Amino acid sequence: MSAQLQFDFTHRPLVPYAHDYQHGEGEPWHFHHCAQLIHTLSGVVRVDTAQGSWIVPPSRGVWLPAFTRHALHITGRVAARTLFIDPLARADLPASCQVVQISPLLRELIVSALTLAESYQPGTREERIYELILDELRGLDVLPFALPGATSERLLRLCEQIQQAPGESWTLARAAALLNVAERTLARHFMRETGLHFSDWVRQARLVIALTRLAQGDSVLRVALDLGYESPSAFSAMFRRLLGVSPAEYFPAGS
Image (cartoon, rainbow, N blue to C red; front, side):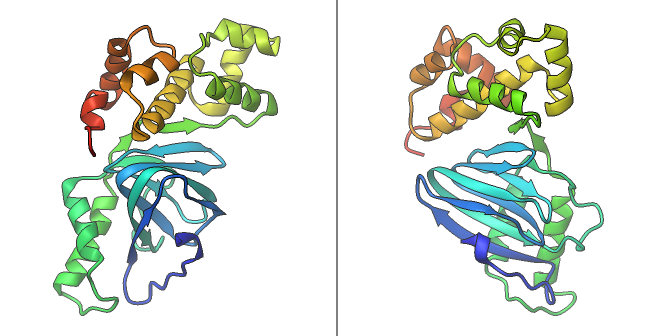
């Protein structure tokens, strides 16, 4: 498990690591003294941090800066290919948690790095692979798979209620009535704590749940109805608008 690994960057700027997880496994809360990129080839990983949750679908990745406390939750069979990076390797590496697109080039570079020796000579193929990986890490495209967490106890409880019953009609008016506050007050506090409008957070929560359910093999029909959509086509339209492809294309049968 990567939670127990120690890393030595004396001879190289990053350490590649491969680990496969079974459905239902995970890793408890921990942190690393280095930055980390978790790239998934299959399955879905939920990464919990103090700032919120980050959902990593197949073929994507999550970036975690050094000293970020996090826990992993595994859905489906996950093949993870991870990079542990010296935080001093580049001055402009990402400074915040984010789910990212993994380019075909970076994917192949990660695979190649797994076969490299720890020590290498300047000007060699090994050095060029490591340096190109670092260059690629500086330009990662960020994906909308984060679910920011609230900080106050009242909004934390509200967010938990929404996640426990995502198919219900969660309007700002209903949420404000539950908390016995004005809608404008709730909207202001919600934006301040999560960085999202209330309606956007609800939509994001539903997307996160949908990704997890679909990765488990649930049908698009069942997921759509459980999340409160009137039809599978309405759900698929939302999915395509946010991810660029339909649920069937994102999770093809047999994958």
